[in-house]
Length: 119
Length: 498
Figure 1 (cartoon, each protein chain N blue to C red):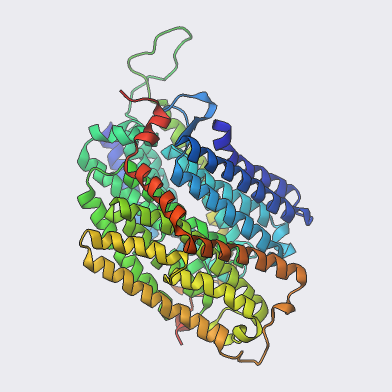
Figure 2: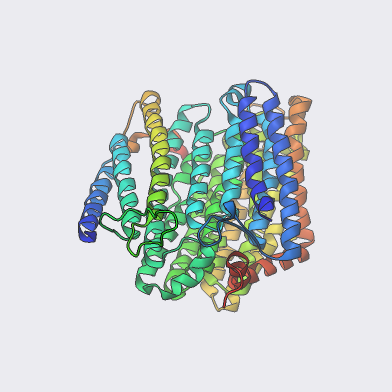
């Protein structure tokens, strides 16, 4: 199962890098969504995978020998929430960039660093 | 003890909430000043406690370490919190004059205090995932501050800042995942021993991931491009607090992780750091030499100065770490102050583009004096604080026969003087191109006080560190000793180890 996850993560990262390098801000945002999900999956797999063993222990019982690791799930949940907030901001920022700068190509966005700065 | 550790984080958070609720009225800005002052008191108490009792740790929610979230303050954390509080007080006073009502209504003071909370949290946490959360708090607040006002340059700079910082965040997160996978813990003190049993090759890969993630935050070569693209665009008080604190959080994280956890393969990791340090110094200072805008010059100087701190970490001798800690603290004070001064120059002379201003020496001699102190300190003139910082690092490099890197450090110091004299000659000495007399009296008396008091305060601090370096160096020595021998840190968090 780890193998399958590893391949999935690899494909996600490859697609994300391709999108992020394609010189268009909207594609960059999509790439960011993909790569952050790849990071989340990495954390999830790093906590070791189990099959159908929820970490629920009845009161008074001993801990089972095999149970899913709850910590990575908590970490991933936090990361998803934070990531969602960041993407919401990033998308609004890109929209503002499009309305004020009339461009979504990073190479054309030279307002803060004009090319003729060195006179 | 944990209330004392939580206080420096809780105070700016509460202040942010109160400032948000009062953002429509002028009370908000006083809320910010008051909150920062209370934070300063809390951080002084924290510092006194750490000096008296050594490393202190607290477990949040009483979950025993390494399972719960730990807050730890050793000497380095305590001094970073203290210096953050000092900068917060200075900038919140300055903001009274610098930030207009429009930005206040949009929640400037709330975002500012949120940023401070994130910075303090990052300095004081003892848990890696918690560090990630504080980085995000800091990042989201800084995004808001950077684009507040929405001028086109800000949006342009903001896009680059946001994009590169988000990539670094994801690197950090992946690193955390892999480190947890190999060691099974995320508590930093626990990691220090847990890494011994892990696969050393995999650990080096993780170390490099962390190096890149923190390297982007710290703005080292070749990962610094977001910094000069964005730092000159927002309000001056925003640039000052960014310049003083944000990159230094990255340096702090590097310093912490690469002394406590990733010290297994120093021949590999710290050699990379040494190269990075040299190139960062050189590229930063050359970038500064090519610029003709005060804030852009100062932004490139941040990059170049970060190189010195990384140099201290890369050498990893006791003296080098002393130098890095000393440099870190000195740099925060000096850099924030220079951006604040640039703000005054903009207000009275009408810009920061060097070709369009002038005459500040003749018309505003007080400002000229206040500029000379941090500017020459940055360049490393005795008897100011920057001289001792550079002296310690160059001495440390010479002690290990690092002739080349010591030479680079000295040459970069010279080039720093070159671009500082450029600002001095064009903004201060030459007459104003439009024949204006840029007098400080053109500011209202309230604005004048709000801008000059924090600048003077930080300048005095620079002079004090410079003329009486002995206690500060001793402090840096004690804190470097704690970094290089983390037994006290680990014992404070996990209890006595067998």
